[in-house]
Length: 257
Image 1 (tube, helix red, strand yellow):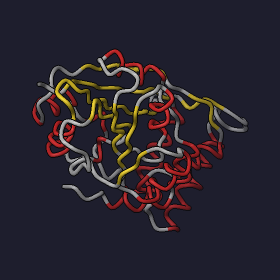
Image 2 (cartoon, one colour):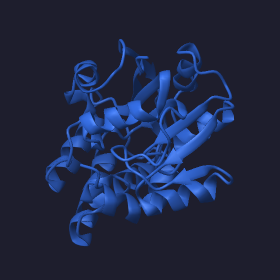
Image 3 (tube, one colour):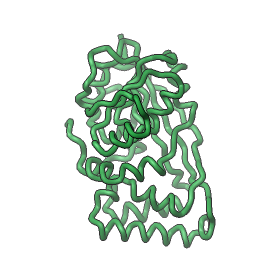
Image 4 (cartoon, one colour):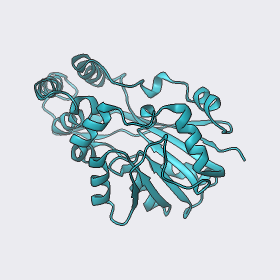
């Protein structure tokens, strides 16, 4: 399907500013994988479902010629405001506003779990040049840490759960092998923890699609419960800053000739 999931359409549009302010960037090594895969600086890259442009800007800093595609208007507004001059299109993974074979790489940061895989992968293959690269990455909370698992239990339990399959629940090698003309899939994991605060964790919660899309009373109750969680855990209680344990998972492959 080419339409945007209602939770994403409403939630990300409503809380685009929160998303931009608290979501982490990606390790520099993720962008460096493009060069390792054969897409040199200056190559034409489509940052698909670019959101507020967190990964878009990292690509630009590394010298890539970037076009961003993002279906949610609020996200596009944040992206264009924070990244002057970037080329931005309204579009979805299943219907890209790009010419056949016009792109050296397609990157998807924190978003492929929203796509309908088969049509998305075929559409990405259409716009990629032969030998072009598809790279997908996710920042992932380390739920082996007590308060982080508590966050997941609280937010998902109170909201009814995420409206998509967690990317960790899918075998992306099998998905890509089954759905498109791609070669072998490679995988790497990078450490990507960062400093946070009680206020930032609450704002991070607010930026979660299905929380942002919830009715105000439920949203407020979830945010209050997260504050209580932070106040009650010995690793976070009373601290101005503390670590948000996080890593980044990356999969990439080449379009077959």
